[in-house]
Each structure stands twice: as structure tokens, then as C-alpha cells.
Amino acid sequence: MKTFDKQLREDMFEAVGYRCSISPTLQADQCHHIKPNTKINNKRWPLYLQSPMNLMPINHDIHMSEPLPTPPSDRVLDIYEKWLQELK
Image (tube, rainbow, N blue to C red; front, side, top):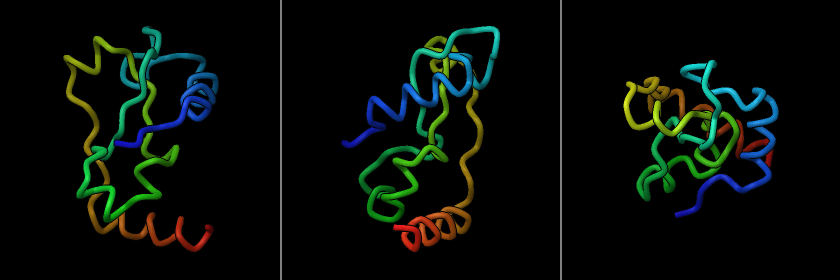
């Protein structure tokens, strides 16, 4: 399954100073899809899922142990996807 490309991940890490989005005292070492990167979701929101709007720099230990933010609603994602398609 497609995931964030290396340059986008690196740009986001730099933008947040390599700090975890959940616990800024920790170093971010991976990127989390806020809306899960599944086949069904990729069919409905292909541009949004791979965009920086859906990327969260996070620390591995936090990613495995802490509750993560709730993704936007499907209706909001439909609006984001439409907007991204119009930009394309």
C-alpha cells in the first residue's frame, strides 16, 4: 500500500523540529496516517490520504501506546478530497 514518500516525511519532521505531535518532549521517528491508509479509504480519498494534512510525525513508543487523535469525519474528508482534486 502506498505511503508517504521519503521527502514528504523528512519535510514534516523538519517542520516540527523532529518533535512528536502527541508528546513534544520526544523525538518523532515515524509518520502516522491520521485517517488509516486502507484500500477502502484509498478508493474514497486517494489524494487526502497521502497529503501532509493526513500526516502526523510521532514517536514510535507513543504510536504504540497512546490514544491517537480522532480523524476528521467522512463528510469533512469528502470536502478535503474534492478540494484537492480541484487543485490537481
